[in-house]
Length: 412
Image (cartoon, rainbow, N blue to C red; front, side, top):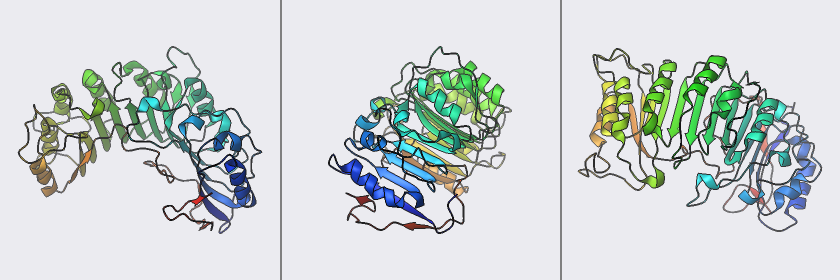
């Protein structure tokens, strides 16, 4: 392991030219053994050329981030520049998003090109890029030490029969599906899972929650969730299944529910969610309150939803609610006295003030199909409840170099 005061942090943005890979390799080579954290913002054909070179001796490297153009994501097999990184704990890779970009346009992650040492990873983030089913199994089978895993999974694993994969230390699992698929639930065993996020494409019209596969997954693993986020395109059509999921986890303290709409168009399906909201209501007479221990709720806004939240502030309730975020839909910002619930977005300002007066931290935020987790920043760091494997006492120094006026990353 690296010693205190011995490691450096490198952040490099590669902009141009066929010599980028060689130039980058020559820049990193003298410092390779001392680099503890490395962020690469790569462009053009740099990825394939870089990973075709001999691995550098990244013997102190703990954290690796790479931002890669979509066309380079599926680079051919290579030696992998970070293959010789015995201390690597965190691997994050994705590609930048652009205006008008859609989830289905994401490229496929070419893990063979990078060849990271999966066996010692505690954090794996592959976002804005799909991992195909044939790659997911070997990746997770090798990554037995994972504590946090955030991946985008494609829809080609249907019907496959596979041996179970146990991730005994996994606490955070964030899965984004192109099309909802029971495949991951059919083989994973995660006994210590605490934080689960499930997202589907906003226009996945055949999205169907795999109720039996998920129940079997829970029965095998016997985990107790504390945090759950469900961002489902067809939430309206499977509210009964969502109620069943929440019944499985009465100990939840954080919940996010998103009934997403395509293109930011408000769909008048709020009534379909009423049975779920009624079960979450803490008005007197409800003896089967769902998730009674919630401290944080993030939810798409509607009148019935706000009424449910207000019920959790009444003196007679046993609620411990502390934080509320209401999501409004893109392009449909409300104004005071605007349309009614049935015709458009409603003004909930008085309701928010009601919650605040009762000690709740209440706010509104624009709806985001992907929960705000994009990979457009070199310092990507998603929500985390796990512990970093980097030593707390480690002191890092920033490597000096040419600095662009608009960036703190070294460029060439």
